[in-house]
Length: 554
Image (cartoon, rainbow, N blue to C red):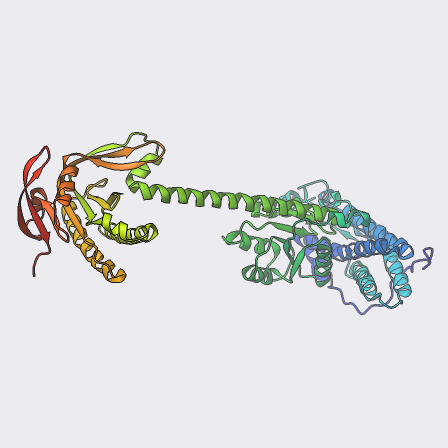
C-alpha cells in the first residue's frame, strides 16, 4: 500500500441516513443547552468508533508486523485525535459563555482531517483483498461508515454558521449552566496512544465479568471487543431496561454504562441499580460523550464509581476498570471477613450458651466478671440412672456414651420445652432448675411436668433400644445461690440446702418414681397426686416428710 497516496478531498456517496440535526439546531437557537449537549454527543459518537476501531487494528498490525497498513492506520488515528481537539475547542464552555460559537470555522477546519480518515480508510480497504482478512475489512468499513456519518452530520443544510447560545441578555439559567467550567472534561483526556501500551502483560490477572451498556451497536461492539482483548468476559445490553434484566438474571463484577440512551437513560439506570439492595454495591463506570461537569457530578453523586469520556483512551479505560475492580475486590474481601467474623462470633455464642444460660452469658459479654445471684423461690430436680455402673460394664465405652447422650439429649429437649435451665450432668445424673436465672412463679409446676416427661422419654428410649433402664427423680423447692465458677472454663452452678435436699430426694427414692419434699407438695397442692412415703433422714437437716408425685387422675 502506498503511504503517500493522496486522500480524496470529499467522501464517496454512501447509503447512510444520519439523524437530521434540524430538531437540535432549532432547540439550540432557542437557547436550549441540553440540545447543544446532545449535539456534542452526536459529533463524538462516530469519532469514538473511528478511534476505537483504529486502535484495535493498530494493535493487530503491530502484532503481525503489517508495517505498511500500520502507517495509514496511524494517519487515521492522528486525524481522529485532531477532530476531537477541534470539536472540543469549537464547543468549549468558555465560548458558550461569550455568546458566540463559530461553527463555520469548525466545519471548515474539520474537513481536512475528516477527508484524510475517509481517504485512508478507502485506500486500506482497496489493499485488503487477501484471503483471511475478513475481520480487518469489517473494521475498516466501520471506520469508513463512521467518518461518512460525521461528514453528513455537519454538512446538513440545516446546520447554521453561528449559534447565539450565550447569555448576552441576562439569561441567568443559561449563564450558570455555561460557566460550570472553563475547559472541556473530554479535552483533558489525551486521545493519541500507541497500541504498544496495551500488551498481554497488562491483561487483568483476575478474571471479571462485565456488563457493557450502549444503544449504539458500533460503539457496543467496539467496547466489547476492546474489553475481551483485555481478558474480560463481557455481556452486552442495548439499553438500560435490558441491562437491568440481565443484572437480575446473572452476577457481574462491573457495569460500563452509557449516559445518553432512549427509553431509560444512564442516569435512570444507575438510580435503579443503586436502589436495589442486591446489586447496589456493584461498581458502575459511566461512558459519556458529555463534557459538562454537571453531568459528571450527577453520575458520581448518584453512586457511579468512575467515568470515562468518549472517545475514550483505551489505557485510561483499562486503568479505571482495573481500579474499580480492585475496589470491589477489597469490598468483597471486607464483607467476607465480616461474615467470617460474624460466623465465628455466632459459634462462640453458641458454645457459650451450651455452658451458660442466655441471661448470664449476656451479662458476661457485657463485661461483668463476678456473677452471683440469690433466688428465694426455686425448684431443683435431679434424675439419676439406676445401676449405671453395671450398665457401663456390660457395654463398650462407645456404646455407653452413645446411649447416655441419646437419653440426656431427650431430657434437654424437655427442659427447653418447659423453659427450665439444665445446670449440668454429673456422670449419669442430670441436674435441672426452675426459676433460675429468670424468675418464674410456676417453677415447681413446670419441673413436675418435666419430671413426668422424663419418665415417658425413658420408656420411649427403652423401647427404641430394647433396654430396661430405670431412673430415680428427686425434687425440692426453696432458696438457692447461683453463679459462675471459673475464669477459663466457665460453669454455672447452684448452692444451698435446697440443692442438697433435692439430691437426697433422688438418691433415697425408688426407680421409676418422682420423690419430692413437703415444700414441693405445698407449691403443687391440688394440681398433682401425692403419695406419702414417710419421713426421710437428711444429713445435717434431720427427718423430713417426703412424697411420691404422679399425674392427677381425671
